Image (tube, rainbow, N blue to C red; front, side, top):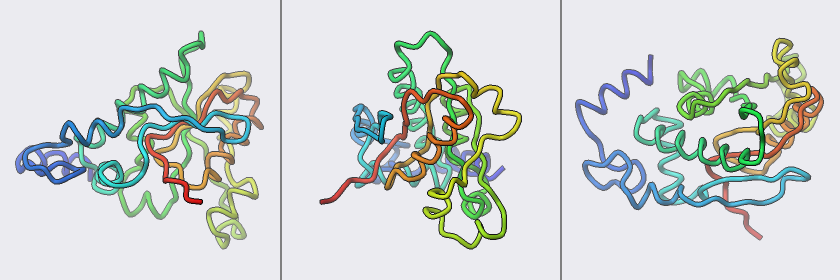
Length: 207
């Protein structure tokens, strides 16, 4: 509902470009172009694939989609995600199965939606979502520590889909890579082969 209201308001009162503020553009051509590349690195034994470096205009576009639910930004990121998935699965015979990294419960309550779920739906991906362990001890740990301790699991109903499947792990932004590594491990534990980990943007590495 939150996203629907925001989209309706955006139609009635058009806003400036989500990336640079240019008037009368949802996302201007120059800012959209920041998501046109395909970049690759290694995430352990799995390729990490992303489009934009998470800074400047690209960061602003991601935040407009992720925190404000802006339709123009969301559509651009969904299109980008689909392109990256299609490229990663180009040599695969199967229809791609995307395994989504779960958002934090606090973030979901605050936003009223799950960004990566919205992107996957906009990208028309066949997807399932991992879940977080929720015992009392896990709740007291920081997110990074929880992930290192195996806090992600496949839902019982999804385990059958993962067993023997070739999948891509999907999130919106990669920071340290810890979340994606845990998601890859959870997929492998369920019997899946992970072809790649894919995000629309990656935080720049320093040093």
